[in-house]
Amino acid sequence: MIKKISSTFGSWQILKQIQKNNPSRKMIVLSSSSAPTDLQLLDVSGEEPVFNNPLSYDILAHHGNQEWTGFFRFAFFSLGDDDLKVFDSKVNQLITSPDFPLGLKDIYVLQPNKKHNDRVLLTIWQLDSDYSLWKRSATYQPFATYTNANFRYHDTNYTAYNLN
Image (cartoon, rainbow, N blue to C red; front, top):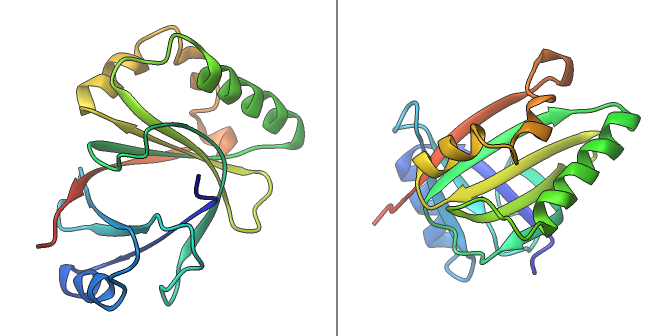
């Protein structure tokens, strides 16, 4: 399993050039669901970033197939020490549950570089509707507590995009 993910943002031309300059790297281009021309490039090689100004994340936990296709949901949280322990416990329960949400292909628990109390849940779904169904389910409810301004919560959605 890889231990690190890094990302950058840019235009189609810039991201295509980065991919071309680094053919040995496993990179995924994501298109924002809210603004399809907003593109993000994920380096999922696990190696040190090649980007000029990368966002780097350590992978704390993972469950799934590492397929890197479908609907990508990034949820960002900033937590106090006590909340962090509870949050991590809830995520571990989800990851180890035999009732893994339908359509959820991968879940990554990420820690932004040098931000101990921040977490990013990267979930990859077969379809955006699978995520919508999960959000209304009982297995989502333990996380609903953290989806407010007290935890500097924000989220963003992407789909895999082919630059070729």
